[in-house]
Figure 1 (spheres, one colour):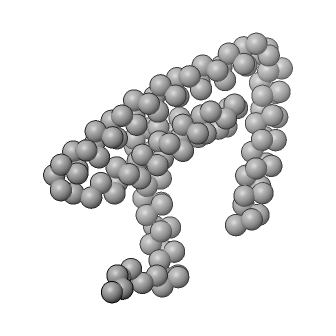
Figure 2: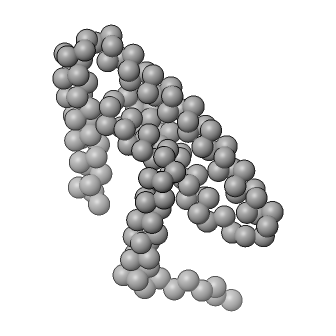
Length: 131
């Protein structure tokens, strides 16, 4: 786990800087900055819209007496997308925008559920209440 975090916090920024320099050398520094700002702004608007839609779906589920597990996972992924979109760079913007696409988010949710089920099986977590 430490290795994954280390790579994430070192490799991703280096890749972002490399891409910013490469793209900036082709289209110009100002154009590169404008693109990064625009994608961040548009992503933030989309994240806000998706987030509000998710809150409404959570309310509807609760009103029907259902547990909004899927909607809460959507909310978590939308929050992650918003955080990633705040990070300047092309890779993070692409990941953030992909997370804001409902179909793509569904694929991430399936993967997260599988990983969680595997974790429960591997750790033999007892999900019962003790009295």
